[in-house]
Amino acid sequence: MEVQDTFREEMRTMVLLQSLGKVYYWHQSRRILNPSFHVQVLNSYMDNFNEKSLECAQSFEEAIKANNGEEFDIFPILNLCTLKTICETAMGHKSLPIEDMQSLLDNCIGFKRNYQYRLFRPWFKNDWLFHLTAMGRDNPKFVKGINNFSNTLIEHRRQFLDNERKAESQLPALKPDVSNAESKKKFGFIDLLIKESDVNNNFSKDEMKNEVTTMMIAGHDTTALAFTWFLYNIARHPEHQKLIADELNAVFINSDRPCTAQDLTELKHLECCIKESLRLHPNVPAISRYLPEDTETGGYMLPKGAMVILSVIGMHHNPEVFPDPDDFKPERFLAENSIGRHPFAFSPFSAGPRNCIGQKFAMLELKVILANLIRRFIFSLADPEAPLIPAIQETMLAPKYPIKLVVSKRLAGKTNVLTNEVSNGQNYGVLETKS
Image (cartoon, rainbow, N blue to C red; front, side, top):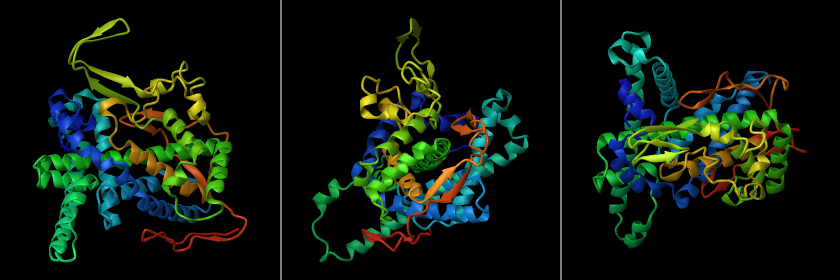
């Protein structure tokens, strides 16, 4: 839903079009956009994930120097990394100024802060009253900034695709008959959105903006939190960080080459640690659903049209399903330990028809970037005995305090230099590690 400056519209935004009146639109939108997350499309993003991970590594190096090797807040680096990633992959925009992205991050933070503030203060659900406050006066600026950013992404990509088509049309003799291949081509998210809008009239201008805004915000903010919680968890459990590092060494054999899809199939402990981190700290702690019919559960009859809240974090901490639920035990997710577990018991991306459309994108991004970061850095706590940072259940499950870690370069037996490797034409830059 388009970001609006009214609480009613904000509520629609944050529940992501779950109202009964939007059922038909949701089904149609999901059916049309599902192919944009086909494995063929996701694999085409591997180069970008590798590239962004190296840019992120460079940012960590700069932060290490700026903080003289002391602890620092890791979330801002990861938040910018995930925003760059979603913009350059699903949104197809590779030349956004850093100032524009930072402005979007600031607007998202402001909008979410205001939404959260109003959610727990019923009197401020009145737009007139809210607009008398300082937050209310600032809110239109955040709304306008977010919507303008979405429009910029759409218009930039549309212009790029138009120029591409014009260039191809001028070379008819050199262009083979690709009508059949074109019909089977898998489009990325924004390309498919533009095609369905301009060619098939399936999306209006406002609906396009709504879809882009939802995907852009959900596609970077939740993933940045997942990265942050993961690094915090392995910093608290260095034995598992070492197992991941050993696994990476076995796969990459002290090489700095890019991560491939085949590599990921061998990183079993990394995947288990990601899942265990998402179990302990699911990005969205609860999800809401409207009942399309009367439903009996637990001896109670819930009427048609009622909204029910499902506690994801509650399911993830059910001791009958996950013994010692507060402990970090990645081995829970080994195949032999998952036998008999209900497939919906672990649902960090929701489940069923309305599950997260981008969950495979998110998992691939997490695996590639974390693999490349852990190959280069050690993440630790300044005080290993410090109390656990509590999570607060807001719109997303966020840490109550900034997560600050000590980040140090992982030493190799000898000086390793990441050369200008090229994979499918992609330059991966230079990163130096000294012993």
